[in-house]
Image (cartoon, rainbow, N blue to C red; front, side, top):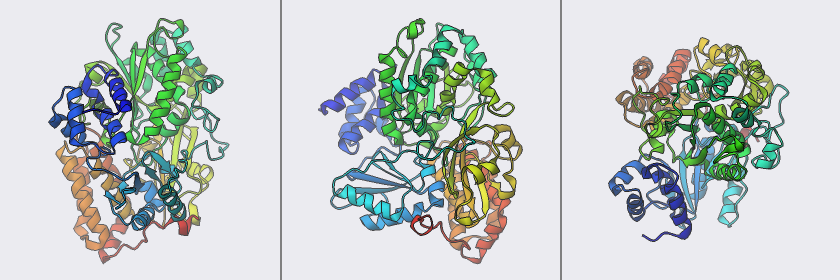
Length: 605
């Protein structure tokens, strides 16, 4: 099959990035889809030929990823998010409006081929809810009016500018914020190397290379009390120390930028506005464990961000911050990006490695752990974007300084993504241990529409919920664990008194049923049955005995799956049934006593 020159060049570049050809499979398919609109049988055969696999194996792998299309889409592929944060601010009404305006439904194409429509799960724009993607462009804080104007403009041939993440770049900073990793948010051309160098860029790397040994770098990160910002909160320096000290052995640094937890949207602005900060953090991690190769695995929905990071990597190579003999230190490090293609499960570190190796993103059985046997069977450090972005400031300004910004055993600052029913949703950088009640009332401007608070998801949709009377507590890993929940990925979703908790549980379970890889029976069957039960309950067909059964089914998933997705689905559901049983009982009359989340045009203006 003869390919367009631009695609041929891209394929050749991808095949040179990896030690095995199969790793190029998913990126090749996505780039081919960008050119042709979908991946047909001829493209499958061509990709298979180039990576020495059978078309059957390629087909089997690509079927796992939701962004790979096997049928043509419209010129403008409209993807409307209806996950929790968007649902709370009228996302369902936006989807219904688009459906009626375009006169098509889910996964359908207009007769003229101009538009296709898809109702999708979280796209990483939670603080800008309700939001949609059109092709790879984000449009946030939508109303029916702005959505109407957007679709009309596209129909007439124009391309409205995409919106920036709702962060320090667009909202006025609150006095309580401590800009460390977000210090460049809102600075013109902050993604460029020269601007980064004007703001202490690469000074941490210079110290790590010229003043410290690898072991000393690890100790500095340990002393900072930096804990992983991806969810589990494991001490970063300790994680690095698990890597075997064998200078001659191939090792990898893997940045997990597959940000897919509903309620969480911090990695996108970090990569868009401060890509060199991330690159610097990756290279420092490489220095610490004596690794010389790294990959940044970026979720498929962030394709425009991928281009920004790629451009920053090119700048870093050109100026000697990547490649051979970095800063004259004798240390070599190579770095490339890798694109995902729509799979929440790939945020789990072992599934992410499987995906990067060109396979389905199934979790691995552990032990062995990645620090010993990871990517391509080699020792691997895996950290997320926020964690690695904090490392340059630690090395530049010192571990004691960074640790002092937070609470005991929880050093530094945290990007909190506050979405839902607040007056000022946004991404705010606050000290670890900042009080949650104060966060909502002062930083986020209080509950919108003058309503009362009902519940808070403190760290992304996988966390047990807190009731209104439980939120006067510090936001750090240990305090949230003591309160029976988790800090997770920092996605704070705020829910007011007008929200149906049964409907919320139903929507959360829809996400996990959709994203379950299907490998573990308790997760595959449990999420599917819970989704059906919650749908039936919310629509008026519930039975009293279902209330206890929902809780029992959820508990049966806990600790019985290869990865945490089963727990992620069960924990919020258990907490909702336990804390709001009266709302389930109220549904036994046959109708939901609450109105659906209201449209923004009617409520928020």
